Image (tube, rainbow over all chains, first blue to last red; front, side, top):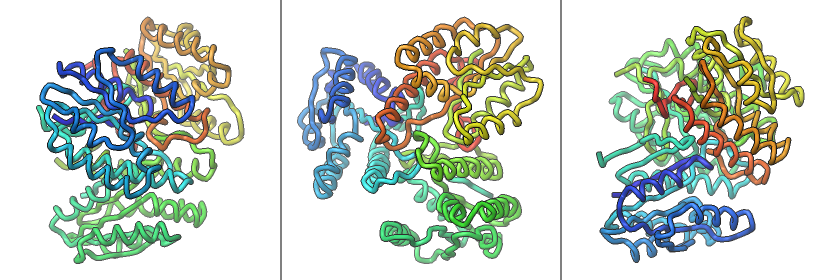
Length: 172
Length: 172
Length: 172
């Protein structure tokens, strides 16, 4: 089962996905995509880590997400990726070719993974058009990725103020 | 039947509205409100055009949208406007008087149009308050217009990650 | 009964909350959190005031919201707070200690208030990550506050284009 959890900043999307992972009853492996860029990011990463159960596996992978997921996927595993937006940031910094290759690899890989997969991402496209061309490109890439991921998942949840809104449910 | 399709950047709102237009079985006339301002916009317009069926009519109207809709409306036509946000941008550039006159004209006209009408627009009010006063004004005008259009439509759909969320449905 | 009304800029959230207040049949007391900072804000405040019924009570409280709510709460009153986001702005300007103390006080107080309470706030976390560190902090604090308030309310409504979307309803 593949589930996509989308939400704004501090919407409670990570906590929601973590509850889902616990409910799965499977061995949870957490895929962190963030790179420690500065003190603010380091602090966010440390806070997120402290909130997660100690028995969860941890894989840090900023770029080759498809490869990392394939290595750890198993019928007894729940793979939790948090989050796609930071991964996309890393890919944009790595260049358009890498971006295209890795997003294509993720979308292809998703269909074949055994076990449960939870993907978390940030909604960034509902504010004013950014002045910055790179921010506009990021926003466009994020929107395209979200559509593609949502179409390949069985369930899509939009989290607002900690509350889930079901956008798609082909499981029930 | 009037339907309003709202969504963030690259949310899949245009594709959703285009599917609705195809499902109508009517002759589709596409109203483009974008003006070719720079290379980035020209590229977006060209990409959108390539994604549309060749047999659709095309009307380019950056300002007098109400007049254009009245000219083409017919019981056998499905008028698809994409999008109101760019039209609002053009009106803001044309001045407050024009903005007020044209938005009033659109809202008045909507009630009387025969056939099907699909209006697409961009949600821009769910990010941080912009520093730029013009961006704040645009955000306010867009929010007001969306409320007014939504209240005059039979159906309002909010698109997130390519998935429709029904906000209003007086058709079913 | 506690109800939380969340929405983007000019989404119609205030008008929605005001309709709810009228429907309560109780004596409405309106809590304004805005401070008249500049001409633009003064104009917004005046416009909001003109839209409210003259018989409503008005309490202006930029910081000690919990105290103000406790003073006016009664089984025959409907307390309408518009909005939490401006209150949060004032608290950020007053410093982290005050911010922490006042938000904790509000969350503790909420559980015990008699009568009806309506809280309005602005969704600000669904746009691109802001460049400005203070804007990022504000966005994070707003998100955290919204989650905490939503978890303590009986009903949570997300307003888009003037239309309510129910995120939580423990009343019906």
